[in-house]
Every structure is written in structure tokens, then in C-alpha cells.
Length: 175
Picture 1 (cartoon, rainbow, N blue to C red):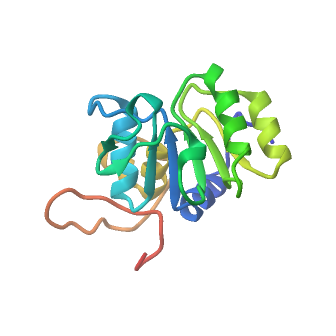
Picture 2: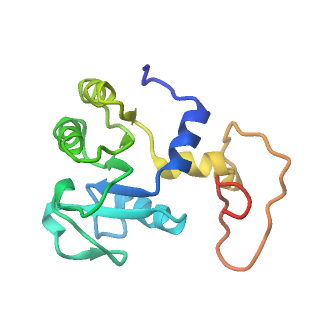
């Protein structure tokens, strides 16, 4: 698979099929992008499991932090790598040692390892690189357009305004 661009249908399929996400490189610092992405995904209904060996045993946003992927009880649908490209290979290998395998390995913006992607895809795991699930979710749901950013998605749906913070979903009605 070419990892230079991804069809919206693939990103939507990934974002609607995964429920439990291990976020490797999670931070307890509210100013860090990994904390912001963790909070956003939790608010959208995902079960985010923070992974950070330096914070293991603590909690982030009410979620227990684990030192490694293998320490997480139960299956993981997606491993999000919020580390640098050099760390992506070993983290991917750790994910590929899990049983059952995750459905998706997602590498955050500026993170890319074609070798790691090839190993994962050889085992049937979908790989997304150099993308942010928060940005992709916001783009596909139309939320990002509320900020004046071109989402490349046209819609005649009028946002339903309510009280408090507004959010949209990529899931169908009643989801």
C-alpha cells in the first residue's frame, strides 16, 4: 500500500471500527499534543489506554497508564504511536507480538517507518502513517470546518447547536 495518501473511506473505516486504542507516548502534561489527542478521543467515545513507562501505575484523564503494550489487559484494536520515527519500528514489533493482533497501527504526524509498516501489513494489520486521528476525525465529521479549515468534505447538514461544547461524530445517527 502507498502511504503517501489515504482514501477517506479507509480513514473512516478505521475510525468507525476501532474502539480500544493504546496510545504509546501518552503524556500527563495538558500542554502536550498527546494529552490533547487522548482527551479528544476519549470525549468521542474511544477507550484510550495510555502507555508510557515513566508514568506507569499513574493515571491520565482517569485512565490507568501502562509501561508497555504487553502489560495492557485485554485486546487492543489500534496502537497509536506518538513517538518519533526511530521508535516506530520497535513499537510496531511489540504490537505485532500481541495476541490477538491489533487491527491498526497508526503513526502520528511526522512519524513514518516504511519497514515497520511492511512488517505489520505482512501480518494483515492496517497501517496509517504521518496522520493524526484527532485531525482526521475532525475533518471527516465536519468539526474542523467550524474553525474555517477546508475539510475537503462537502455537506448540506446544518449543525445542531446545543449548550456547551459542540462536537460532531463520524458515526451514523444514534451512534
